[in-house]
Length: 166
Image (cartoon, rainbow, N blue to C red; front, side, top):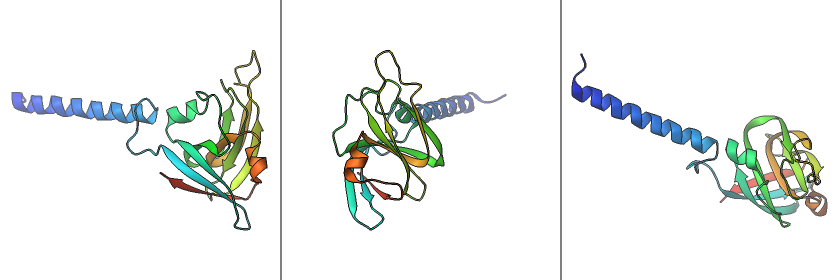
């Protein structure tokens, strides 16, 4: 039989472990702020000739919950603003315009930091939820900016992104 004091220590340890585990899971899904996650960053787009094409102030989406919600809770973005989605590795990524209120450019960036593709995404029309508006690219990072901003700044496939977390 286990002594009473040992059972108490075991129960407290199990409870503490459960609380920490629950906090970790809730942070990963974006329900709690993750102490390891970045909130904001500056993204510089550098052309193949070394010229700086744009500096974008971005919100960082690096948990499952933040990536799922994305910009759907925003009314708009100004030029020079965006959202940077961070994934653990490069893979095919599909982004949808679910419940979006405005058009965006979706910039797919590979593990090497270079732009692989740029999609010009429209917002859903009345009666659409946007779930069918899918845009796919190979990426570790996905940068979303106002639609037309990629063209205005001259962003193109092969340009490099430099990310500086704040």
